[in-house]
Image (cartoon, rainbow, N blue to C red; front, side):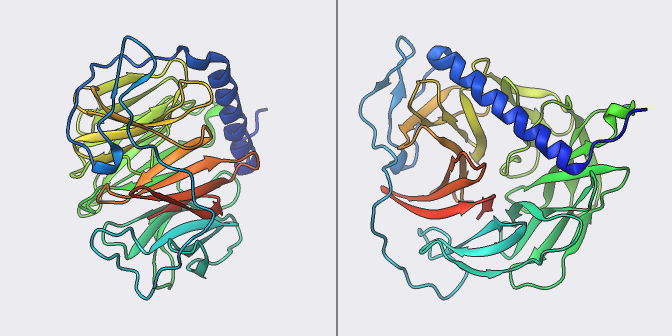
Amino acid sequence: MSTEPTRDELLARIVAKAQRIRRRRAQMGAAGVICMVAAALVVPAWMGVARRDHKTTGIVANPPSVVAPSTTTTTMPHTTTTAVPGAPPRQAVAVVNGRLALVSTATGRIERYITEALPGGGASDPTLTPDGTTVYFSRGDGTCAAHLASVSLDGGPEQIVVASRDNSVNSAPSLSADGRWLTYRHSLCNLQAGAPGRDSVVIRDLTTRQERRIELDPEQGVVPQRALNSDGTRVLTESLGFFSVRDVGSGKSLLVVDDANYCFRSPTWVDDTSIALIDTCTPGKAALVRIDPATGKHLSDVPLFSAKSSQILFERHGQHLLLGLTEESGRSTYFLVDGTRTRRLGAFDGITW
């Protein structure tokens, strides 16, 4: 008789799968090339105007790189949670040992915790509402179960958003820029026991509570933190060997970007006109690449200071960037990229802003 996997067993499988993907990426090396037509379009000044020359694997011109962090940092005044116009957000929300904490982006220090350590499972996958007042996250409920919850940055009780019904794990919440649409991954724990159906990406209208589902292969379908475009009509999913932009209404793929060599990491919406990702196709190097979500055309690329770059997250205005470097421990070390300056925030189990 088959038994259902525990939540720890599922997490162990996910970690093992990630390790297999890293090995395959290392084996494939520089052979991966994305089939796009280069186009020089307007991008933020710090991202430069470099174009990929599709006749070679190099970079044309000399765009400014995302520089390595300085050995010294300047402490900024920090009195409110609201960012000064043009400046990065003053705070981020990080996962620390299963709890959510407010972290100063000026110093990297934990200012206070906003969730408690509860029996059943920790908090993970945080994402902030567009107004920066509330964080949505996944909360473990014991053996192979997790629900979505929200909590105010001012603290207070957690509110259940999506319950962990039908023996399922609900994870990776993402909000549209207008705050109306929530998307998340719904994973069935008992697929090995012969239950029908697949994992799915769920898009929920937070106004009407109506939901739409797009089925996924159980072995694929990562939902990034910035998975939805501004009005919730298009959703970005990352799979093994490709990522795609899908129409929410029909579930059909509007754009599929091949990643047969496993070179691309952390695709994310910057705004409705561009998607950013990390390109590691050149051994020992990484670049921040932007593409057109409608056509797949290459818009720009900028060298990153570390080949271990694995995660990117723009703040809502697309002007400032959090860059994560995966460490051997499984945690990521995060850096704030602000114009031409880069400063280390710290090592966390996840982060949002």
